[in-house]
Image 1 (cartoon, rainbow, N blue to C red):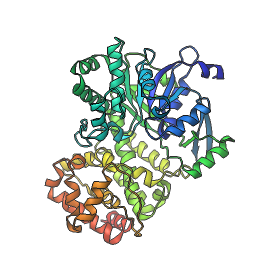
Image 2: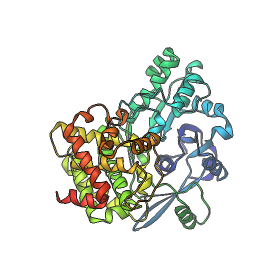
Image 3: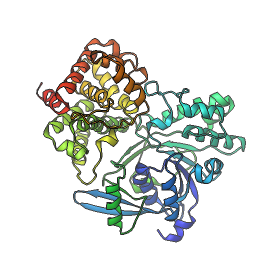
Length: 472
């Protein structure tokens, strides 16, 4: 693609969340699907802490490098599909909202992480006690949350008698299309039932499954990016060679030809979504909590420990039993994941994966565990994962070193650890209903097994506990 095309591409997509994953995934598909006859430019938006990145991208003429790196080498792609970059602290909220509400914008896409949807983790409904949502309900024309921005932009479309838009979630959450639809429509109902009805008629919310392991950029990886591309690129990103995007084909107002870049359009994303959330993300969380406690800083370090590989394989086999996919595909997927975990070039931090566990555990660990409990099947690895998470959010690893816990509920978890007798701690955690629901606390066997795993981690450490589980 020539620089002339880059400079003139029209904005047809507004993407909320210019983070590492977007830069390594959806932006690449849009770049590779770009053509001069039907160009779909993307205006990227950061709503919170991404102001320096937005400024840097603007200075770079909206271009940056993606480095796909495996043990066999690296491949560099210069992304040229971005047409604009906005931040409320630089450009103001109205510029962002009017771009989202523009007649030329046909897709609003999102990578805002689980907590950005402002939903209760267990019920999957809008959390009307969330401070951002409370603010936006009081001042809907000056929103702070992504949900507030979407609803206000849709209100402007409605008031201006414009057509609807497609809202496309690209986050690792189950039924992400339905999740963002619930949040948006429930918010809209609280400020204007008439608007909510219009959204129901005119806006589509396809689900999607996204997959590309992309670590956060550190000072070390930034230096590596600059060395590989030959110049300072603060927006550059290192990712793995593998990439997958499965999308529900529900776009009423047009879309790029992402399939030319390898995206799959299907009627139902759920089987792919469940496979990825449980086998990949579930294994990631398992390794993150146990691995970090044991002193392993990256996924590659963790999986190189044979005890961890044995346990991760066993967990993925158990997760596969909950999925509606051909066994051969699941076996191939499991082996491909082990190879991806072994990629020493990524330096995917266990601490990064461990963030926001209260938002991630329900779909990655708790839901498949519930299915096994209903079938009266073995759940020991799920109990171990839950116990490791409970230990992790105490902020102390097996060597006694303290560390920062990043989670929306970290203050609540810290209080539980400091104010609860050790023999009652597991019960206190399981009574956090918006993470665990109301049923698990009633399962005496499950609670006892989680307590056993937790006590073993406290007394013997994560690695020794894992060894014991491997031989039991």
